[in-house]
Image (cartoon, rainbow, N blue to C red; front, side, top):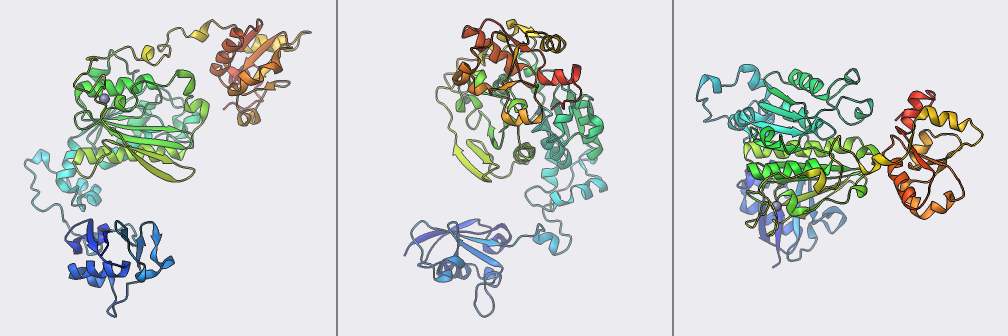
Amino acid sequence: MPKATVKVPTPLRPFAGGVSELSLEGTTVGGIIRALAEANPSLQRHLFTTEGRLRNFVTVYLNDEDIRFLDREATPLKEGDVVSIVPAVAGGTPGAARGRSHRGTTGEVPTSPADAFSRDDLRRYSRHLLLPEVGVAGQRKLRQAKVLLIGAGGLGAPAALYLAAAGVGEIGMVDFDAVDLSNLQRQVLYSTADVGRPKLVAAKERLEALNPSIRVVPHETRLSSENALEILAPYDVIVDGTDNFPTRYLVNDAAVLLGKPVVYGSIYRFEGQASVFDARHGPCYRCLYPEPPPPDMVPSCGEAGVLGVLPGLVGVLQATETVKLIIGQGESLVGRLLLFDALALKFRELKIRKNPHCVLCSPHATQKGLIDYPAFCGVPAPGAASVNDGVPRVEPEALHAELDSGEPPLLVDVREPGEWAIAHLPGAHLIPKGELAERVDELTRASKLVVYCRSGVRSAEATRFLLDLGFSNVRTLQGGINAWAQRVDPSLPQY
Ligand SMILES: [Zn+2]
């Protein structure tokens, strides 16, 4: 007889000896479900009516197909098939449905008054205390935990809210930005009234209002090789919500050197990734990506855009992994890379192995300390001169005067068509930066060029590119079309 795996859903596990899956023999799906019920008699009434029919709120899947669209209970089984019982779930717990149970709290006697939870705490965390996997012991671990969030942006915002709500005792946050109106589309930690305020001031206020019993520790600084070890050292778990590679490698390396887990998340347009890097038990970020991609291949969210709910989802995945690490329950993402595609609404999972030659976490590690991360990633250090600093520039007011003169320059807009649709300068010629190399012929006849983009980064790169090709009279519009809108034509929207 073929052997198949039967997946038992959480609500039914108490009636099946607590197991999540069983390997059973059977020739049909109905046969194997009956075999399961026979082996666990208390399961019988949950699955079958008194007449012996499968209850109609119990949905059964063979692999990923509903058996009602196959041969129902008569659907034949092959060796290695997976049969899943999928009950309807409405968000409650069997414990709660049976009245106020305090499972998970039994045997949990506070060891000292300082260790005890107040009446309000017990009520606040009631839905945690009901879970045997958390209970008072887990809630106490959460209260004693110290979690550091690197970045208080798209990923850090939702992660911080859930960690504060969960009762993580100390939440450190590293960031030095102010809240910008364009952050609010995804950074749900902030409100419209916070625009212009330092992020960490607004974050501390919001998180401590959400849960006054926790402490939020702001580190209002740029994380660097000089301060990273000192900032990370007091924390148990590091949540990486950075948006740039130098900081990502810095966080990884510092965490490996200090022996701490990093809960990793990253986002790009509609796609997200999450994992847990803990070199003591699995791979580190360098095992997955020994080297960063070249800087011109990695547009930031500011350039590429991002679906607002995506960092919410990935940040909440990071909060989930953080809570699991703290309470020591479940299976963490160590050694697994979770990929999420919001457009297809699909999760995929890839295995990540420890690199036996990793320069940082292998037995043959050659790197014993922190390095110069901007140099490693090929990007200019914060505040340092960039290769594009030397390109000729024109200020918006000067360009305005030139456009009114007898010899106006040709304007080249190197943004994407969607950005062009928001606003563009009259008479400009649109060539997205990625198409510049193949469409450069469209520009050769103009004697004078001014290149612009949103804020001046892409146009400086495009100007450098054109100068290298031999164009002699090219300049970049300083501050991009946003600066133009601020200083020359306030009727244009900024974005
Ligand atoms: Zn490694």
